[in-house]
Each structure stands twice: as C-alpha cells, then as structure tokens.
Image (tube, rainbow, N blue to C red; front, side, top):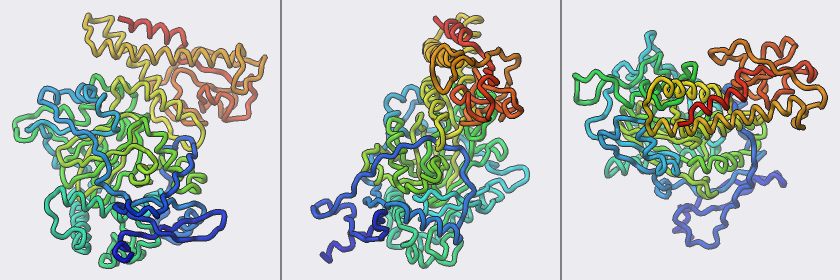
Length: 589
C-alpha cells in the first residue's frame, strides 16, 4: 500500500543459528489496524549480577570501535520494536508544596513518598517567590577550566559504549556558546522538525521525537540523516550525531549553583533550605553519618547540558534517593522506573546486546547505555516521564532507575540523601553488592552509618527529654536494622566456629575471633573486601599472610582472596552481636 509506505521502517534482524542477515518490515506507531503485522517476541529473561562502579576506558570513533560494534551486532539478535512515542508514556506526578511545607525538604519528601514512590520519580514546583538565587560563579574553579565534558555518540547509546573525553571549557559562558551554536545549526538543518512550532510545549514534544529518532537509528543507517551538518565537529563522517555533556562537575571545587537567599530578595543572606550543601547536613539525612565527603553523593555535582546531551539509565549508589534542581536554561525530559520494576528492567536491558553483557556483565552500571522506553513498555516495564524546567526539583526514590536528555543548554545540580525509610533498601543494596561479577561496588559502610546514627539517637534520649514522632519512627527503623545485623553476625559466627555447616567450612578447624583494638575512623582501601569491594564494618576476615594482613574480606568471602589454609584465617570483630542488640534495646521508647 503506497499510501502507508512511509509508516513502515526496515528492521535488521540477525539470526545466530543461520548466521545470515535478513530484513523484515515492522509497522510504526499508529498502524495497529494492520492485523498482518508480526508482533516482536518478548525477549527471554536472562539474569545476571550487579555492577562495577567505574566505566571502562572509552574507545571512540576508530576502526577498532567499528569492528567491535559489528561483532556485537553479529553475535546478537537485534530486537524489533516500535519507535518510542513520547505521547504514549504516562506522566510522573507533580507536587506543589505550600510555603510552610517547602521549608523542610526531607519532611516534605516523606509526606509525598507514599504517592510518588510508586512512579520512581516526581517533580516538585516551589511556591511562588521561593526560587533559589543563582550563583554567577557556578562551575568556575580557581584555576579555570572547570567544565570537563564527555563525547556522546547519540546513534550508539543503545550499544553502551564508553564516552571519550571531550573538550574542557573555562566557564559556563564558553560551554553555552558551543551548545547554542550546535542547537541553532541543528534546528536550521531540520526545518521539517522544528519549523512553525506553536509554543514551548510543542517544541518540547518535537525535540523528544527527534531525540528518539536519532537514538533508535542504527549506526549503519545514520549516514545521510544529517547531511547539512557533516563536516562539523558534532556530526562525524558516518552521519552520527555527537554532543558534549558536562557531567559530574564537583561543586566543592567549582562552586555550587545555589547562592544565598531567594529570588527577588537581595537582602536575604540565609542559605536556601533546598541548597544541596544544606540538604547534606539535614538532621534527618542519614548520609551526614558517612565518614567522608563523597562527590555527587554527600556533596553535590553540577551538570551542564546541551541539546540531546543524555544521562543514561542508572540507579543511585546504595539505592539512595536523590534530588536534582534545574538552575537555568532549557528543559530536560526525564524517564523513570519504580524500584519495584528494577530487576525486570535489568533483565530486559541485558537482552538488548547479549554478547556485550557476556563479556562485561556490569555493562549496565557503566551509565553509558540507553534502552528506549518504547522497548521497555512492550516488555511490561513500568515507565513514566516528566519535563523539568528551570526552577523545578526532581526527586528519584530508592532503587528507581532514571534517564533523560536536555533540550538545549542548561545547568542543573544534584545530590543524594538518605531519609530513615531508606535503610531497608540500603540493606538490600549491600546484599546485592557482594554477589559476584556484574555488580556495583559499595562507596560507604552501611553498617557504620546505622550504628553511628543509632548511637547519636541514643545520646539524644540520654541527654534530653525531647520525644517527637520522627524520633519514634527513626528509633523503630534503626532497631529493626540493628537486629538484622546482629542476626547475620551470630549466623556467621556459628558457621565459622563449626557449630553449623555452611559455605565451604571444614569441620574441626574453626576460625579465631578477636575483638579489634582499633576501629578506623574512615573506611579506606584496606577495609574493603578484596573480593567484592563491599565495605564490611562490623566484622572483617584477615589471615596471616602479607596479603591477608593488608587486605580484608567480608564474611561472605571469608575463604577467598588468597591460598592460606582455613586455620590461618581469623575474624576481626569491630562490634559484637551482643553489643548490637544492646544498642537496639537502648532505642526503645
């Protein structure tokens, strides 16, 4: 049917058993009336373990890279799916706090959590007149050259390639000049997409459609898509669109975007309550008990975006919550997946390019991969979206995967936080972190945070008569986690003492337990498990060899890491199970 030919696109399918490339036609959105269209199969679920923290060294735009991508395509089945249609993605909730509600960030997030967490992400619009002032020195370091960028190849985001280093810009104005030039050039060369836009919302919708057109265009088919932009630095000779993303700018080194006061009040010199540095010190934020500054986690990162610049699918360290603020510039479109669908998302993501995950089980956690929402929705993963404009806050909830892209030059800022209700999910993260390859590494000791927070609350109980509802709730959650920790310590002590069978223990040769004389104030490299990179605070396993004296192991990996006999291994107890239970009991009201 010639009238409908423009609604069809060719999908390349590789069949591994025949080692032959075939082509078939798939219907685009809006052609549901064609009953003859073959629906794509749902991919088989392939379970794997979690991720490593750091991305691999990027290989960018050379013959080796092209060879590897072709091998990946030949070794996997490229799943056919309808191109993502943003209009069909449900919207995340938007909240409008009163002036009184807005004064306490964590208390307000807690008040909306039961409604918002089921979506994974939400947007919070401040009351009129409460927009933070912008710091004009944001991203400007003492030595200049503050904004380091990463090159992103938009046509290859589905392959999960590492991002090569881009140009370093002296300040926001220099980065903005580049971003504005690219946006102007791109829109002028695509009049069929951007001409005669009705309003801002219409422009946002068209930009989202164009974004997914680029991302879901196979690299082999990209040439000729942007002929008028060829020979510029933002489109290579293959026709692939390239952008520079200024992510992970350390706000300690290059200044935050938050200035004192609120907009419209030049006399106000107080810090805004939603200032990321203030949020890090909030009394109800358990991350204040983390023993070190961790950029992006306990202290904020600043993000500088341009048209199509992408933050790929990821979940926060330790399944923490996060808050992101849009300081200035163009909008961002966000996509979110609730924590309840996190494992389903991971399973689907691993089926996209199976050979890559076979070689790198932690590929998903390099934060370099985009899985189109359309493909996720087809596989029954719950996906929502929202549009963040300057002045809007976005909150992501524990274990909620999220991704998105910029509609033009913009500046944002983000930090993690840990309300007391996060503790249960934090314990889940710790258990996942010790599971073999393809997982994420711990960045702080969960047990240390819980024990330190419990001791601080105990001190309040002993020195004051204040008893608020929040104290009762915190006490209850902390007691539960402490009892869990005590149970785990007693279980492992029983196994390693030979009282019960388990985990490779040789009967008649128990490990020696001893109380640590010195508990390090900060968890360093020598306190991480050498096998899984978890941070065991309560108990660590050591042995008599030089390696075993220098490097620790968690209880789960007590017999790994070196060739020492079982009798040469010993357990350093920083806190006994009885002490943990006594601490839990002291929090009873």
